[in-house]
Image 1 (cartoon, rainbow, N blue to C red):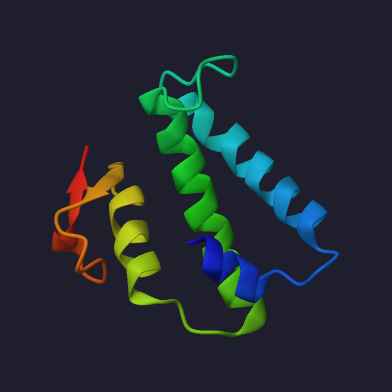
Image 2: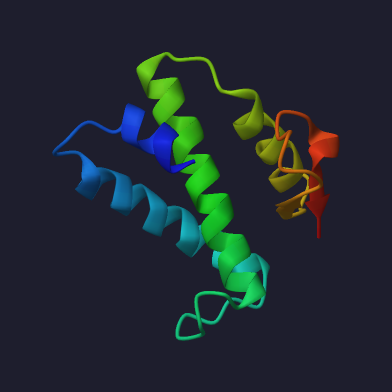
Length: 103
């Protein structure tokens, strides 16, 4: 996901990216027991940040008029249904919804 970000977010636009992430985190944090001061690996927090990153990538693709990669679409599928695609079933595939372990 970092390489998708790096390819889409031009230099000098990182502040805008960070603002989008924080707005999304703020919106999503009320849906789970998010604790702002909790460790980064606290499951509800990482679920919120993971979703925020994917939604921000979706917006960056749309703004750039670049089709969404399959792995982003697969994760969006789960997030939009209230689930967290928290792991891959196998490291060899991530393009289909069944490739993810969901919570």
